Image 1 (cartoon, rainbow, N blue to C red):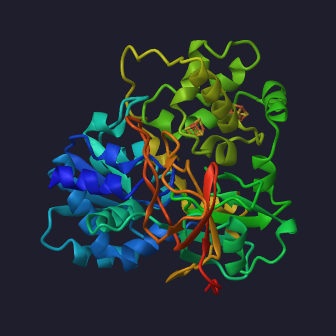
Image 2 (cartoon, rainbow, N blue to C red; image 1 turned 90 degrees about the horizontal axis):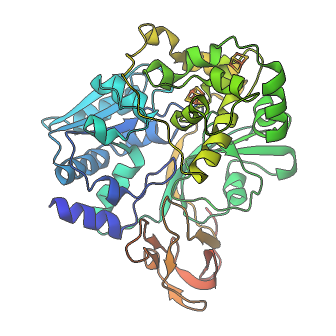
Image 3 (cartoon, helix red, strand yellow; image 1 turned 180 degrees about the horizontal axis):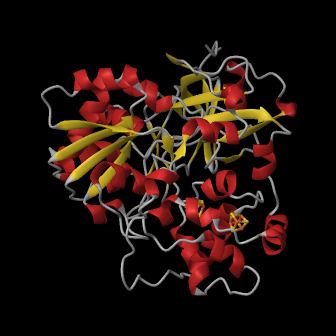
Amino acid sequence: MSGETVKAVRAAGVVGAGGAGFPTHVKISAEVDTVIVNGAECEPLLRVDQQLMAAESAKVVCGLESVMEAVGAAEGIIALKGKYAEAYTALEQATGGKPIKLFKLGDFFPAGDEQVLIYEVTGKVVPEGGLPLKAGCVVLNVETMLNTADALDGIPVTDTYVTITGEVKRPLTRKFPVGTPVLEALTLAGVNDAGRIAVIAGGPMMGSMLEDLSVPVTKASKGFIVLPAEHPLVKNKTLSMQYILRRAKSVCIQCRMCSDMCPRGLLGHRLSPHLIMRGLNHLQAGSDPMKSALLCCECGVCELYACPMLLSPKQVNAALKKELSAQGLKPEPPVAEKPVALFRDYRKIPSKRLVARLGLTPYDVPAPLTEETYSPQTVYIPLKQHIGATGMPTVEPGQRVAKGDLIAGIPEGALGANIHASISGTVKQVSDFIEIQADGERGGE
Ligand code: SF4
Ligand code: SF4
């Protein structure tokens, strides 16, 4: 059965739903003791996982059981915030009599950071720069569990659940075929004038600005947060790197609040963003303090919550990570491991306070889940929407496809994920995406 699950998940093109889209069949090819389903959904305003755990609890549990079998894990844990009461009750029923535990997380940010989650749930620290496997764990997203359960029934990934919220008339959570243009999805939430808004793809802490709203929804999309163009969060996310560096070099007061609040530093990893900010004035990217930027998970705590000068250590780290990775540089392994900070529990950021700090309190409202899938007229399915190699098209313009047909495969011997038609229709274009036009008029709703 274990090999069958991996095969089915590979065939169905399952990737991490949310985040970078790591191919799931590779993740579950390992042997581990514990499988953790990450139901924290700690990014403010996103409402997908908490509602899916309530509405699709049996499927989440089915996906988890198959993965546990595939990786040989004796333990399965679904970690979710205690405040998701409806999801908790549904999962309690669905897990009755099964070797699966529920773990109640506190309402703090970033409870869903993979390494923070593993520490909260198991008390183990993933060594810095290491994968969860080093702590005997594999961590998977809630929607990935649904897609795994579907894969076992031969159903490939063609749709994805997305929350659309913020400055919209009707905040919503809904299933969209992969390849639906984002702007089209936004209109369902009541966005009519795209010229006066800014859109963050993902959560407000880790997401990035969408410059072009004609881009498509992908398998890894989780949310789109619409904000007025002049919102401070938008300003922060659109600063130029030149401006960020100039400010960092001249204004950082070395108060070290960024380091004191850093969730990875608090776990004992050698990450001190204030040293990186200090180093900008006199250190090379390849020097030891600067190489520690590679340990940053880009959670955004340092710049969107901790820094009293409104500086951007996260964005500095992100730029350094790119430069260091291009040079193939890595931090030296630690001589001795540092313990978890004694006061770590007192430095967790309460979600409500974070929402207020981000200026998002007016938007912290429900985004109800609609089960109905949206029906676009045309989809533009990217050949690269996951970590690894770009998909190899298996269709040509003019060819008719049915929803669920394979349209791009994994290149021989490469890390990647299969891609399937998300609607039935005719292939119009094959380039770095595959355009499919639906047959006849589609109503949208
Ligand atoms: S919190 Fe801001 S001002 Fe303080 S050390 Fe960090 S970057 Fe500098
Ligand atoms: S973004 Fe900032 S707070 Fe988060 S891990 Fe990186 S350095 Fe630490």
